[in-house]
Length: 209
Image (cartoon, rainbow, N blue to C red):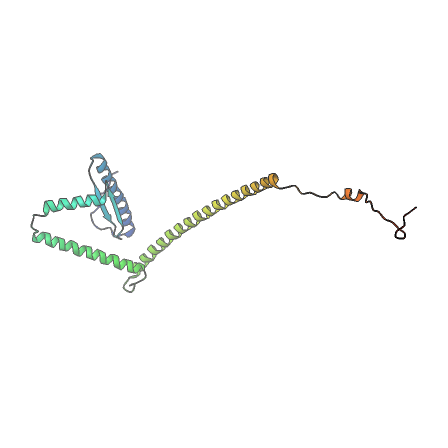
């Protein structure tokens, strides 16, 4: 099967554009990793999506690689006087970045429910779909967290029941060994005891004959 050649232009469909971005981003990062391993090269890749999300790969330290690049750039191009063409190119790049930042800020405000007056119906529908997807992801994450917390509490409850049972057993064993025996009087024996008394009936000073 012959694979068709992809035309190098912006993909208009938002879903297709996101799918293509994910596939090619993963392929780029994979190739960067392979290059660093196979050729022992110091590689750093930085990618920003159209929504401003950062993706990066570095074979060592990203900051270290950037510092090394900056030092090398200064050494290589520091002595060269910028031409009019390079200045115009830098201005064009700066204007393009400023435009992208402005678009991102506008999109962020719209997600927050601000500045919707100038949106078309299609843009509003797209925003609604994105918000519903984000809300669904948040709910799934929240449900997972709740289940995790419930499982944790159930495990804690089982441990407390186990500890309680052990304490009850220890108390029972302690009472069996150390509790003094109670002395209960023998009521029947008390009833059978003879009580001797010296009882004399008569006048005082006389004795029974």
